[in-house]
Length: 433
Image 1 (tube, rainbow, N blue to C red):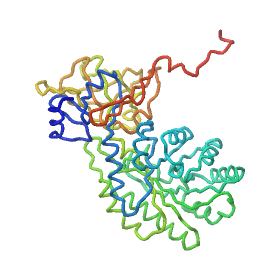
Image 2: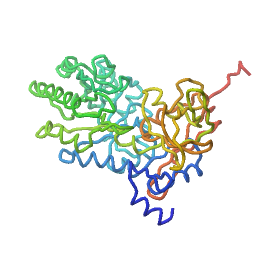
Image 3: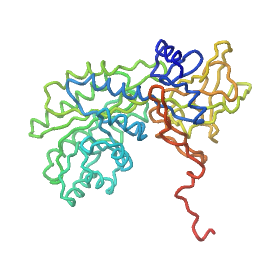
């Protein structure tokens, strides 16, 4: 990129490190079109600077309490993304044996790994115990008994934290609300209290923490404050009964901007909740995911066809719900930007749809943008979280490539799948030959 273009970027409007410089959409100091020309479409593109800066914002906001910030890797588990955050000092929040494997490959210290999830298998539990992770977040008494049994067999003393369900509605989409009474997650407070009282019955466990996570994409501090105050009352009652609490895990859930939302900043969030935790002896743990990577990524695609009907204009893309399922699953909003904008063109309203054979295969509906042409490129913003990590091979479509941009450089951090990759692991049995 020329020095002149670099200067234009510095003067331009910054939006999560994605800029228009003249007509061209850029990520940091790289034209997105240059990436598309080199790598093809569809492709996920991530900004290294945005990832790092969002992690640092949380770290600065809560520096007075020095919490352990464990990035929730289910949001985006690419090895390069994990390595970026581990180098910044992040721990990792995992929910499967596969994520444990990735965490260790990324160089994360075991003592900075916390393990959540309602359905840990015996094999996964044993792997995590042998690895020496910091904590298991417990979701049920049955799971508690299983971890105690395995830890006893391995002659290990294992630290666990009870995930409590405070019965708080976070005011978000029902599929990502996890703290209500009907949720599959966590223990009600009465059951959690009984577990602490009965802790001698779990000799291989050190029940030393409380975990609370009420949901995702929460835009205001009120649900957090309500849940945390309720949990602190519970913790205080436990301490009065002689239970020692070493860790209080506050989960994640901070919302980001997808469209016109006005979420609280890390600093605003800290100012609201910090007074609750001063002079407490336990160590805080946070598990942010979307907040760190959501606006650090886009999904770039090409227009295959333009289709006009009596009631709709459709832009048919080379990407679809198999690559970005959030619009179909959550009715979520992703801004749509052309890779090359042209202010001379008239405005049109389009539905942006994919090639998948489902009526629900759309990425955006009823969006006004410049008049489009086949072959042009588009970017779907705020796709860094729960984009590639939820992608599938539905319709036998290879998953897209992933690219990381740092300054004026970019690198492919996951190759585009091939048709051969689709068959990897499959075998035709002898009786069908």
